[in-house]
Amino acid sequence: MFESTDTIAVVLAGGQGSRFWPLSRVRLPKQFLSISDDGESLIQATVRRVEPIVGRSNICVVANDTLRPTILEHVPHAKVIVEPEARNTAACIGLAAVASLATAKGQDPVLVVLPADHAVKDEERLRGALSEAVSQARDNEVLVTIGIPPTHPNTGYGYIKRGELLGGRTYRVDRFYEKPSLQRAQRYLEEGGYSWNSGMFVWRASVILEAFKEHLPAMYEGLLAIQQEIEIGAPTSLRVSELFSQFESISIDFGVLEHARNCLVIDAEEFGWNDVGSWDQWAENFAPDSEGNLLKGDALAIDSTGCVLRSHDRLIAAVGLKDVVVIDSGDALLVVSREHVQDVRKVVTELKQRGRSELV
Image (tube, rainbow, N blue to C red; front, side, top):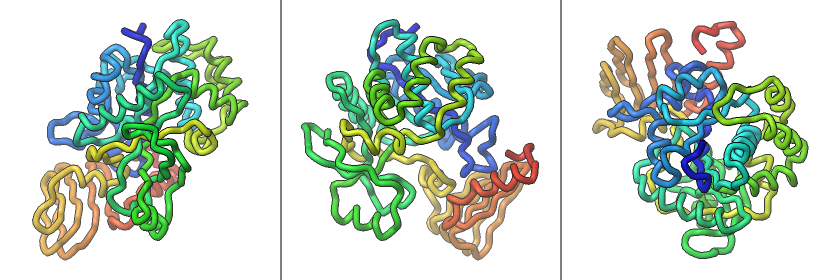
């Protein structure tokens, strides 16, 4: 049972992190890797940051059953909600909502939904934004997202156009925009009034389910049936798996938020957010050398600039290179230009097609 049913953290940990190949694999995806020198994994850092808001006993992690042992190794006190199969974030969040209602026994908890694989430098500022979101969600029938102040025209993030200021740092959402072109992203930055969509959400369980009822009615009906069958921490029944497999694979953004009329955004203070979505973003968490190179392990860069080199148990030497990423995992070596780091997932797709399961 939960320590309190008022506020519950829902940590989404089912992704593979294929852009982090060759280190991120199916059985040990990115969220269980460390980007810090202290060895703390991304999921451990995510849980530690949110515990002051929700309490140590109110941590739920959603992932497939294969990852359950790894989750409990990293976060032993977590309650695991088993996602029967990968059906994108809408189904995953809906499952967490009905599971929390089933376990909360008549209460309507506020859910703080967080990806497991983000990095944050100023944790107090993040908690300030989350606390404001929790207050809004507790008192109103709203869906709240955390907006990140854009620092440059990034084309890898979705954007949120802020509307009416409601008080504090809370605004109505005027509109969600998907990942833009560079020209459009530059215009958003020049116009002002836009935030990056962090993928962090806060709402009451009943409110997000009401949004499912309006915008994803078939999924809503399936979730109501699952609510009668689910218990957090218990094995997934065949009935739950059958119902879940019928859900449309769609993101919460596409399926719900872009259509809902009760969305708010917290215009957070800059807190050093990084979604660690690629190897060059990973490198941003460390100090480069005088030539802009990040060297980890036994690595050497000569007459090179802007490179990321991570060795395993052998020397990596780069000479005369610019903006190249080299990642050695021991059994595989990745070499990619920083311009194409978002395309690393194509390697994983190709390996699967070739039957190279030992490398994915």
